Structures are given as structure tokens and as C-alpha cells.
Amino acid sequence: MGSGRFAAALDIWVDPAPGMLNIARAHGITVVRGVGERLPFPSEVFGAVLTVLTSVSPDDPAAGFVAWRCVPVPSAR
Image 1 (cartoon, helix red, strand yellow):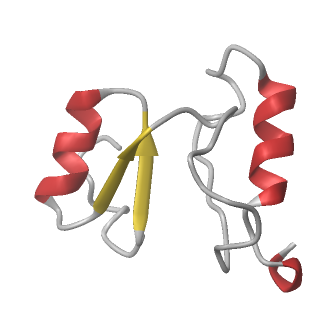
Image 2 (cartoon, rainbow, N blue to C red):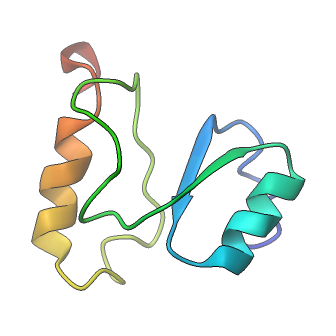
């Protein structure tokens, strides 16, 4: 999340770190505590998925890629 400067256009921010969620919330972004390997959303609900540094930090990067592929609507894949 960093300063949040580039996240303002996002609808939802998922992060396991409460501090990062607080920064996102301060920028008016809806926040959800979670991890990329187990996204807390049903399949096919988003028009796009943006991941930043999430392929290098999760415990199971392969599971993250599977989860990220499931949440966008089919036309966004």
C-alpha cells in the first residue's frame, strides 16, 4: 500500500497487515483483511484484479495465482 498514492482508484484493498489496511481506509478505499492465497470473495465478482508484490510474498505463490484467476468475471481473464 505504501503512501496510498496509486491505490485511490481501487475499489477494494486486500491485505493481511492492519497497518496497510488503515492507510488504505484513510484514502477512502474499502478494505478487507485477507491473503492472496485465500481471497475472501466468491468466484467471478470483479472486473479486474491487480496484484502488487503478491507473487513474491505469499506462503504459497501458486495458490495465489489460482485464487486471483477465480475472482474476475470470465470476460476479464
